[in-house]
Length: 194
Ligand code: ADP
Image (spheres, rainbow, N blue to C red):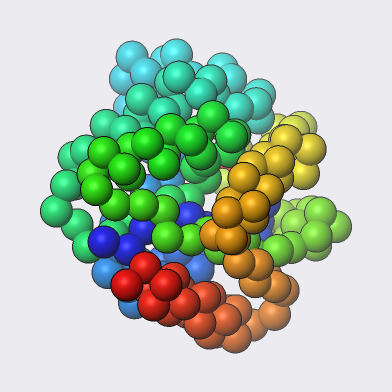
């Protein structure tokens, strides 16, 4: 298996680059944000539980998030690999993910940080909002999510950096150029694991 995490602030282009990555490396994409949105849209018991917290732009608790992630991973035991997106966001989640990978006799082979400044992210989201009108892009919520990322979520990066599993890619520029760089990094993960 090849298991990669894509990491970056809201508006960094994770969605676009994830789409390209899963195709090129034949990975199963697991986005905890998409999973939570599916649950809230379909008003499942889990969806009802997390709706308010998601609406506020805060993080869902580790217990709930880890359980949902685990269930999703275990649904796909035979895939070629996973691309995790939006997870982990805390050190507890990172540790739980390592344990889960170990239980499947595999590992997280690397983390790709898509680096975009807070200023650039805000400019991009303002533009996206005017085009797509994504429901979770309203001003307060968005500010909260950006704040969460730059004040809290980034603290999970040293966990991987200290273990030599973190690679940073500049997220500003043409989509294809960024993907070229991401591919070089993903190839290096593939080589390192074997
Ligand atoms: P963003 O566009 O801000 O990167 P996502 O689409 O990844 O956000 O997630 C949307 C929301 O879902 C988050 O604001 C949070 O409430 C919840 N969420 C997603 N992933 C996690 C996680 N790993 N831990 C806690 N909450 C999460």
